[in-house]
Each structure stands twice: as structure tokens, then as C-alpha cells.
Length: 266
Image (cartoon, rainbow, N blue to C red; front, top):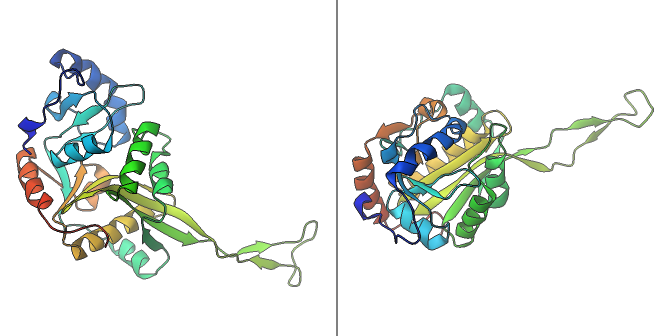
């Protein structure tokens, strides 16, 4: 589907040009929270209104469009130009990160805790675009097998456990070694054909989100995905090797990726 075909019924949507300046102003803080290096422009916003039902979301992703808005606002639909992507072999893995991955300090899983991951991504001191409605919508997509998560786990450290009221001694100190794992990072996104559209990631320990990304990239290569969309470039993703491409090129590559016969999991 070409961008020009992203047309919706007038009774459901409103995207008048005179409203865009106000919408862009209200989105300035939202863009800051994504650490985007540039401000949005009117051509990035392609529609306003509608809902987050699965059929509409899937139609949007197939057209190169995604939802992004503040709580209390109508749903805003975006198609940035340029568009940020990761090439399948384009992730830069610094030596420290490579050592962390080799150390097996973290354990990665897929689709084990989608709800926890999306809520971890929403838990940001600077504010978030992941509203309760967005969480509900993407959890529906997850139940339908379209939205997926990567989880990063870390085992609880062995902590000295002292008897109350006693000073530590060789005989009185025991170790709390329950071995329970904690969710320390992760990411989530939408997979359609050979497209993976990354939505957000979070980290509660050093390098945890980067480990999740490296795990995802390896997984997508094995599954023969062709396009990894991250929507907008940030300083963080740029350091990891993400690049920007023109919207027209992204839409062309998107149509090819949608034809790929693959799935995120078996």
C-alpha cells in the first residue's frame, strides 16, 4: 500500500492542515521523550483520529504508518521522512557489550512477559507516549500473535543475610540464594511478514536493552526478516548503527518485506 492510499472515512478521522501546528506544539515534549534529534514536520503527520483496534493497526503498519500521541489527545498517525531503520547486519556491538553478551550475565527470552515489558517501556520519568490505551491495544496484538517481546533476565545476587540484632560473624552469616530472576530490560514490536517494527525498549541494568537488541537482531536474521523499522533516529540508536533512509525508499522496502514468507516464532 502506497502512502497516498492511507485514506480513511471523513466521519472517523480529522487531519485538517490548520490543526497540525497546534498538534505539533503539543507533541514537542513527546518527541523529546523519544530523544529525537529533530522536530516533527507537517508531512510526518498523515492522519488524526480513529481507534487502536487490531485491524486498523495492522493496516497502518502495512502502509508504513504508526500511532503516536499524548494521553487525552486523539490518535495521531505518523509516517516520518526520513525513516530510521537497522540494517540486518548493521548493529554496532562495542567491545564492552560483546563481553557482556559472552559472559552470559543475562538470559534472553521471547514472549515470556510481554505485559511486563511494555509496562517497563512506559515507566519513564520524562513521560511516555505508551498510554494505557496503547498498552491495551498492543497486548491485544500480542494475543493475536502479531506483537512480540524480548525479555532480559538477571539472577538475584547472593546477598548476605544476617540474624536480627547480631553483628556479622563467620558463623552467623548466611546467603540468600533464592536464585529468582528479575526482569532488567527488554523491547517489543510488531512483526508482519518480513517486517519487524520496533516500538520501544527499556533497561534497568547496564546494557540490558542493548543485549535485548543484539538478541533480536540475531533472531531476525535467522528467521529471514528483511526490514527492521525503528521509526525515528535517536543518539542512542545511531551509536548502535541505526541509519535514516528516505520515506519513499522505506515504503518500497516495506512492500518487499511484507511479501516475505516468515514468522517471528514457529
